[in-house]
Length: 304
Image: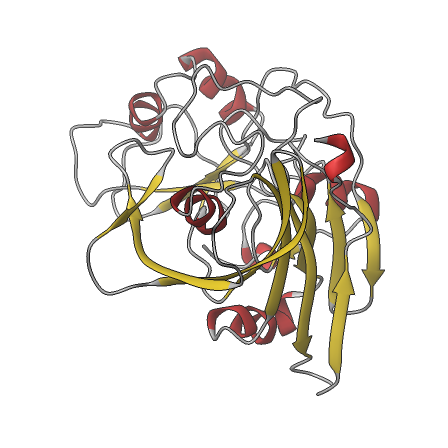
């Protein structure tokens, strides 16, 4: 995906254009036919409206009309739109903002980026609209259900340097989790395993083979049937902390996916997943200085 400033449609209301690649060849007589088949959930009348409004263009910025013949190998850009989204009541908190970095405390249930049924009610779009930063982009991700620290790149020119910190595992990440306690488990410990996608797309699973994930686990406090753990992941696999805690017999409180998927999945704002991205620490690739950011949020055994 090209950087935001090279896309042929500007950011609108905090949302950048989406992009779809056209196969080299196909049975479609027109661009409109391809879009109607590729996105069958969108009515043909809606595509006609978007095209008439100039909201669908090719990679050169040329408007795509309903009659334009199909041209394979190109990219088309368009604006996503969704029906009215329910407001996620909790607000994000900006902890740090400079010319290169934005650090934010994300509340539970707020997605970081648009996807599925979420567009305006996402952390990225909220921040773009609130701060007027069209180039803003997340440097890493958190699950929608997880609260805590998210780092954003403010400008495309320096984004790669900060992305490299995460890809090269040069960021110390520390999480807190409230779990169902299992007495007798020797802590601290380091849990290593191989994680791969499950047949159910919502889950990851541990499989035999060379480990590709590692988490340090230490005990902070025990109260009744629950415990507060400190978790330090040394890798960044999807759902890693949730899978590792469940594998140790310490499933995270209010986790509806691990160890067992519990459909129907629905948000209960009174019972958020008890997982918090608490601390991020790294050497700044531009200044060379050590930087540490701490979440203002807390998990409490008193509330579990």
